Image (tube, rainbow, N blue to C red; front, side, top):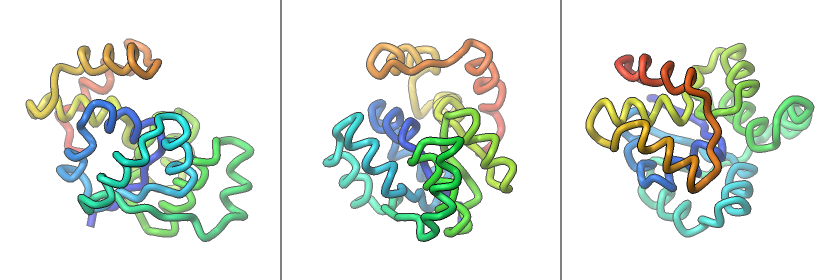
Length: 164
C-alpha cells in the first residue's frame, strides 16, 4: 500500500488548484496530521474543503502519538512538518509530501521518499491531467505567494517522467 503523510503547504497548493483529488493516482492513503489541519484551517480557512477530501476517502486525519519526538523536532521544523514526520514513522508511510527543504532532508534521512508540490504538479501536467507547470506555478505565486527558484522548476520538470 502506498501511504503518504502530507504537510500544509502542499495540501493548500493542491487544494487551491483543484488537483488534490488526483493524489489517488500516486497514493492509496494520505494522512493529514492534526497540526497540519490546524495550519491549513488557520492559513487558508478551508475546513469545508478539507472535510470534503476526508469524505472522498483518500485523505485521513491523524495525530502523532509520540508527542515527545514531535517536540524534539520542533527545534528544526515547524509543528506541522515535525508531526508529519513522526506520524509517517508511526504509520509506516513510505512518502513524505512537503516543500520545506530541511523537512525533506530529514525525511530522506529516515528512509522516507520526499515528494514536493512541483513534482506532483509536473507529473500531473506531463500526464495531461493539469495545465502546463509554468501556468500552475504562476497561479500559486499570484494567489498564495508561492516561492520557488527556476532551478527547482527545471528539476521538477526533469523528474516528471519518473513515477512517483
